[in-house]
Image 1 (cartoon, rainbow, N blue to C red):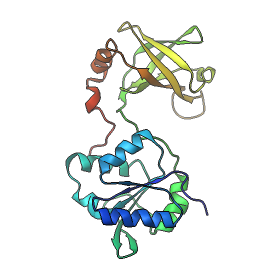
Image 2 (image 1 turned 90 degrees about the vertical axis):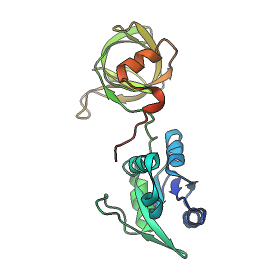
Image 3 (image 1 turned 30 degrees about the horizontal axis):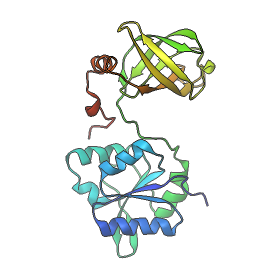
Length: 232
């Protein structure tokens, strides 16, 4: 029987409940990452790979403010099983109007979580914007334009994206602002494969003091307040 390739985030405000859910996963041979809050789970998901979320339903109901927004964001990103604990039993609980979920823990662990493509939670919100770019790659300047940009990186449209390789360092000149940003290729979308413009996803290596004001003026946000969260 397949099992989740990465740990399951376990979320509950109650220590005993969190420990009980973690114990159930451990007995099933599945790694668990217990979290005392949704914000703690978000921080883990920003920096590592996880296969799903096992959460105590009362904790979702009690979440307020930022916690509620993060709970909604995580539930729309990962496979999730909302449960109540009764003694040694775990009972799946559906919420009115919520997306469908598995009827039992076995299906969640053996079918839904293994089918999920693990990826890190996006740290910053994408902003759709078109900017002319000159990408320096292997001492060649390649013209392109942005599809979107964030505080963490950008997607540049390129009809010959296959010439790049993931992990390769590049520099991007944005002529409109006269600034250069250093980055690495983190994703390649070849031409004609998907119903999506071909190009390269870039992860910024660092943003110096000359670049940060440019990103701020483009996104019209400050870095610390531009998390990629969904409105509830």
